[in-house]
Image (cartoon, rainbow over all chains, first blue to last red; front, side, top):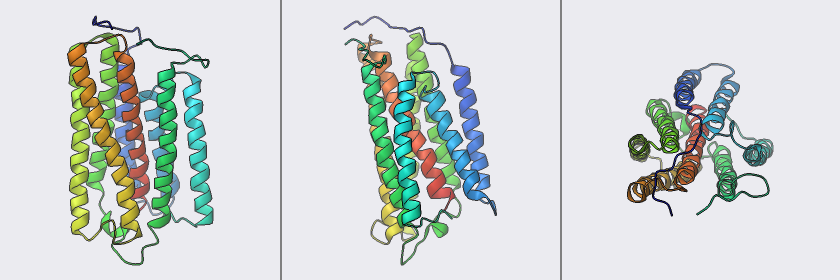
Length: 97
Length: 191
C-alpha cells in the first residue's frame, strides 16, 4: 500500500458545485413558499423536488459525468419505485393533500 | 488494493455501491409509500396538518443537509487534487453539518412527543417515526463513516485507493441527502 499522496486528473468543478448548491437553496425556498399555494400545489412541489433530486444525483453524485451504467441502475430502481407508489395510489387511494 | 474494471467498463467497487444505492431506493420507496398510505388513516390525533403547520425549522435543516452535500463534493474534489488541508476542512465540515442535522431532528422529535405524537399513538405517528427514524439512522451511519474516513486519511495519508473510498462515502452521503429532499416535500410540505 503506497503512502505517497495520490492525485487524479479529474476536472475541477468546484464552481459548478457551488452554483448547484445555490440553485438547491433557492429551489428549497421556492418549495417552502409554494407549500401555501391554493391550487396546483401537488404538481408544483413534485416538479421542484424532482428538479432538486436530479441536481443532487446528476452533479453531486456525478451521474452526469460518469458511466451510463450507473444511471441505468438508478433508473431501474426509480422505475420500480414509481410503479410501487403509483400502484398503491390507485389501490389504496392515497391522498396527497 | 487495485481498481478493478468489470465487463461493463466501470469500477466494480463503484458499481457495487450503486447497486447498494439502488436497493436503498427500494427500501425508502417502501417506507415513503407506507407513510403516504397510513398518514391519513389515523382514527385519533394528532394529525400532520396540526403538527407541521410551520415547517421553518425543517426547511432550515434541509438547507443544512444540502450544504453538507456541497462540502462533501468539495472534499472529494480536494482529495482528487491532493490538497490535504482542504480535504480535512471539508470532510470535517460535512461531519459537523450531519451532526447538526441529527441534533435538530432530535429536537424536532422532542417537540412532537411533547405535542402527543409517538410511535404508538396512531398510524401517522408510527409511519412518520419509522420513515424519519430510518433516514436519521442512515445519517448517523454516514456521520460515523465520514469520521472514520477523515481518521483514515490522517493516519495513512492519501493512498492509491483513498480517492475511491472518499467517492463511495460521498455517494452514500449524497443519496441520504437526496432521500431527505423527497421526505421534506412529501412529509412536511404536502401535509
